Length: 112
Length: 431
Image (cartoon, rainbow over all chains, first blue to last red; front, side, top):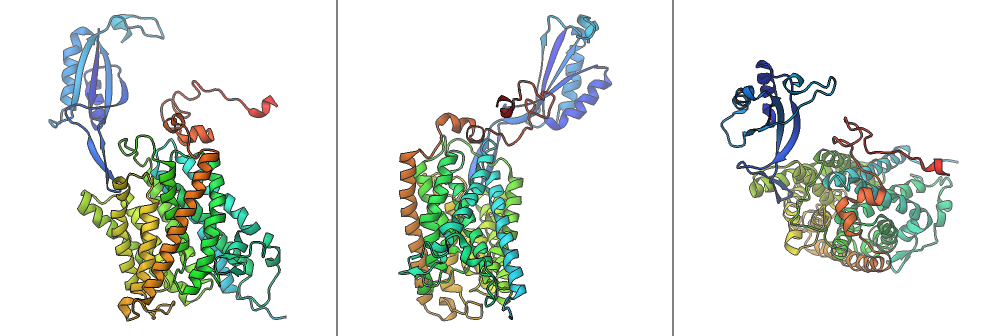
């Protein structure tokens, strides 16, 4: 079992969700995030005073998937999230020890 | 018995009174949007609270101090209209009821004190502010309004033109704001920590309400439904448009973008500057007043970074500077074609009027600065003027008023976490 986490540009969320559903992914968790990478922030001006906004708004997607499908799902996310411009985000996967479906108590792949 | 009452004049004066009242919540929203979300309620409460206090004082002695029989041009007779009982009877000889003028002028006093609050956002003890509001109105606004507007007041008798309050309202409040910002001190972290406006939508709404109400403020000051009021409405409109454009042009050149906050600020700067001048200039003159006020105020709001005083919402840069621009320009741009009937420098009137305008403007500036400083030092020594460091960090909405303005986040009231970690308890159940 793997937990795949993707930090993406917010406007790409719908594309990624559709792409994942298209390959049979059954669920995901989405949250708002902010942070910085190579993209850096942007500058705002209020009555002549400049403010640098260093944390950029992003969306974090989390998907649980069987080990053998992890590479495929990462590929799908990257494909859907890519614009080729700076700030497209990151995707990573980490091993997961246990997963339990709360309703039934099923474990492992059955719980997905 | 025939009554001299003019129903048109009376209707306009009462309508204008209500329009000026609307400027108070307008100002509260204009300021409230510019502070951070953790102190917006405090800002609304400072502006509204000043009006509550001053409205009451007006009945007891405020009107008497301002419009009572003058002692040496300096102050009206305190007790002359105590309680206003002597003014509520029908006066068949008056074209408008005397109490209508009392009510109209009351709104000016209520609004002027609130203007100062913008200089001391995010960090002021509410009780100290409410006491300041009453004391400042009594020692600064009532006397200065007497000088400027009362028959017998020394600035009025000197021949200074201040139709609706460039000196008595804007220079007066702006100078007080400068004194308070310096004495109360800057917010912790200013200017290094970003303190961005939290809601520019309500800033624009507030500016719009101010603009509407200002037609009552300026044109109502004609005290009649006549040609003067109509000229004033037009001049007020065009000066405001010109100032907003001028502010945006300065921003576009200096910062690269025309901003919504700049537009709202330009609107207010233009309204401030045309306030004293609206009866004295032609429509072209009003446009020039607006252009100069918009451009000069757009530059003046940067002074606080140079001189390191935290005038949080630029009361100095807009009201003091805008008030000075408008008051002084009368001496240059006044034309005797306008209702005030005076020629300024450009219209062949010489420098005489300009000299008078300068005396009026700087007398009010100096008096307000000094007396406000004395009041502020005393309140600071007796009860403290600002909240402690922790309250300032947490936000004065919670620490001064036990409220928060918005419940929009995940952990707030409306979302999926509704009620989690919250417990309701009624004070009345414990009694």
